[in-house]
Image (cartoon, rainbow, N blue to C red):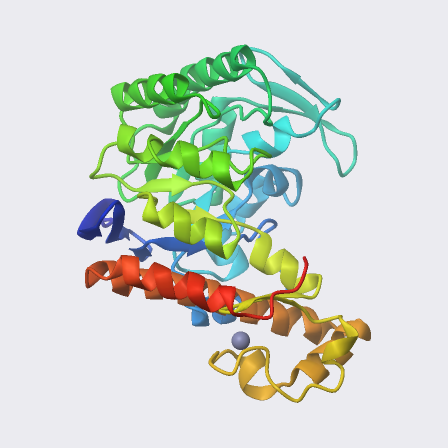
Length: 376
Ligand SMILES: [Zn+2]
């Protein structure tokens, strides 16, 4: 019998929360940061290494996996966990976000979206029903509703139209998902930066009923101030006893600000993508390892970091292998970034549990203010 999906909220401190999500693949400590494993791999990392950074859960992308290698093939090969050798929980997105960003290559109707593959130009259709089927074939533990997320800024009329379509699709997603013990379906709140639309969306989702709720449609060009503006009220529209997931966020200070406003889960390509482009995040800000000033520097990226890149290598070495386009540069810099992100999460979890989150936040910002932050 599969472990029932469950969220146990263990402590709150202001709006910030900490808890544990139970799934049939194991527990997820919240607040949780989910590294992105787009095509069945967290780029430049072994799954064991991702686990060693402290990640409890990964995100996989429906859009990429349905096109290559195909959801039916993954299912025949034992499901995504087995295929990619990651036995812990996996959350999959619905494919909606990627499909909607294929401007000019897709057609949107009430039924769903037809689009051309960016790989070979072949035609495909994604609907709420097909998205649920693909995520089931992949074996996802946390399944996301199929939705439409408009890029910001756009008109309130356009945001309202997309949100109401997404709510009709959320209902179809709920029906298609069915009853799957140990697995969860999350609804996605839309509504852009419009408070009334956010509230309308939350009410529609709660009427359908989901295992968890995502705040979608942010980190799509509105900027941090507008995003925090929405997060000042939007999490409060959602049930307190269910996980709240902020999609596609973000930089370290975005993550801390989101947790301070009541968010429990996040994902972003930033730590992995930045690792491959030579940008590293530290307690004192960001460093660009390709800059010439690192070429004679014997210090690690961060003296206090216990990741393999910082324990065993100098900034000079990392600068050298990055400039030489050696594969180990992507491996080490990605590892460091994921390690740092998980350190932020564990620091926040402990601080919230002990009722000292405001002090933790003040330290986080103070250290960055005195750091050697380089332009991105
Ligand atoms: Zn490190």
